[in-house]
Image 1 (cartoon, helix red, strand yellow):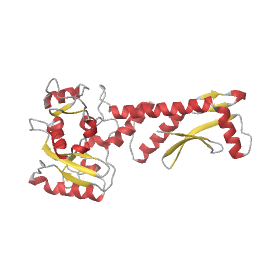
Image 2 (cartoon, helix red, strand yellow):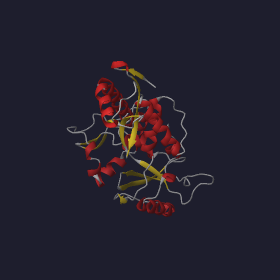
Image 3 (cartoon, one colour):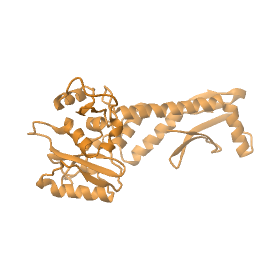
Image 4 (cartoon, helix red, strand yellow):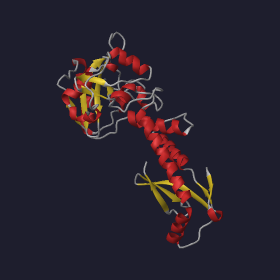
Length: 304
């Protein structure tokens, strides 16, 4: 808890970042997720990392690329997955097992915004996951759609692992360019150096990313938000920084205008308040407010 001392002897206890951390801990606990994170950034990052890697159950339309092919042995498993996506069921069991690990990185997702799904027909023994398969489905998912890019083999015995196949970006561009047009790099004709799939894999392992050239005048920046040299999702890092800054700005706003907020509380409650104040973050219908804990009077809304 952080203590602020205002005019006329008022003492304010307030730590909005810690309040937000408590909310994150509660939400992770609700999902049965254990975390070793102790620091604010680590905790928030793991929470949003988990959210980014998971797919919210809701009905989605399934689209197939012109290039899409499914091995016959995986047809049944694919059809089960399709039915679940179209009916709005949970498809977490089809994702990679690291998807439920809050501190595990997913470089393919961070780089290109692409998920991969195993195509087993039933769950593994003593596991919540579908049986693992050599061929896996690569797809982009948004609120209402599932875009099936292609199925590639991975694992032992496969010379060319699929995780950095730039062919996937070309397939997306050729089939659904409107879904990624905001990631086009304006004014760039081509890359000065052609980057192979293997080079891209090496870049990822070393925390570096590069644009993808599909053809002349068609160059894309990372469609998954990119990643930092540490391997962390750049998108999530920026989100955590924004939340932190907005909460700290809210604290400064309240302390800098404390007499105004004290007057607001007294006006709404029609009584004088104690000189020891406790303000905290409070959520109502997914909106965040700073409230006076004793009177429950909302002081300001915080954009998170």
